[in-house]
Image 1 (cartoon, rainbow, N blue to C red):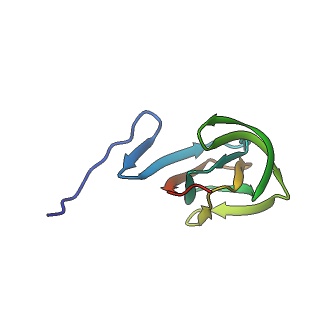
Image 2: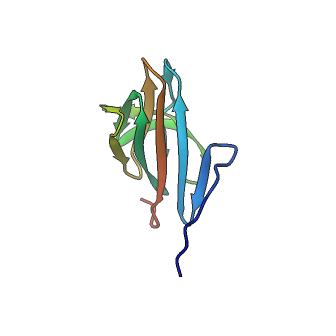
Amino acid sequence: MNQPLKISLNSQNSFKFKDLTVKISELAPFFDGNAEVHFHFSDLYMVISGKATVIIGNKFTDGVEIEDGEIRNCKIENPVEYEIKKDDLLFIPTGFAHKVKVDETKFVQYVIKIPHEEGI
């Protein structure tokens, strides 16, 4: 029989449920993140409040692999910018480089990490 399940956030404001990881991301104005790429999962952004620019590209150069399938500090080639705001969803497929910029107000979102079994 299925039962309701209450889960508490850990110290990184995230929790894991089966194969999904959910994180609450709070970013203050004038945040300009580093580009990253994941090869084992996709990201789904669910915006709770504020607005941000997400820069995405399916090609990248450089970067450092910090663990298997996780590249950080890469350069996005031919980037496309997406403006996201409260109530928006943005799906970032496996293998797409991406970074977030926040310019005006505090930005809060859920980031859901969706596993990609085969990798790319």
